[in-house]
Length: 309
Image: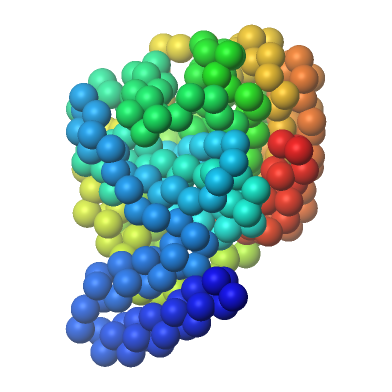
């Protein structure tokens, strides 16, 4: 019955958003209202916590053991919402906007070094009151999760790499790696055209995103065009052991979920990574790209829940 009323409320809110969005008068307000309704339908509450580097925003829901979700570069906590709704019946879920990304304020370039990012995430989790936890991470977030898991194994119960992680040497170069070698950075967005082009890099088939939300996300990222380049360079110059080197120190049970159609990091790296991890479960998924939590949220959630169980 509780879910029925949530879904009813979501429907009403979606209708309101549709009217507002159609009028083109308050596109940002429409997007925020629709995002709030989606969070509510997934049983998530918007929260924030104060840290030494500023306020950190996150979404929280469910009860039980804690699963922390860490997104990739330029991504958002909201990218996990549809997946998390299939997990929060059995677990407490925390969807974090990584420090310096999403709803959080941008930070000084030095704060995007991987070592610093890992420290900042831990500080945020400590302030939230998270002690032991499972972590599910994508792309850049995977490097951060790996560093945390290796440094505090007594607190991290398992690590799930959802989508290809940064820091793995794939035998076959990916499309993105070849593009970077030619001087092109497909993930760095400084214009609306680049934002649209990046979608084709991330997804074999672009998932449905309500128009007000898609426009709001694009506008938010383009408005940070200058810092996008700075952040990319700061992350790329991080002087830390790559995830592949850290692998032997990640002693927890690990899940490696890699999609066949991933253009960002080639799936030939999946076995390389799984072989380097002491306690890995490898899943190769089809019909998804770099962000399986958006491509196939229900199936990705099922794989994660089966792994944790």
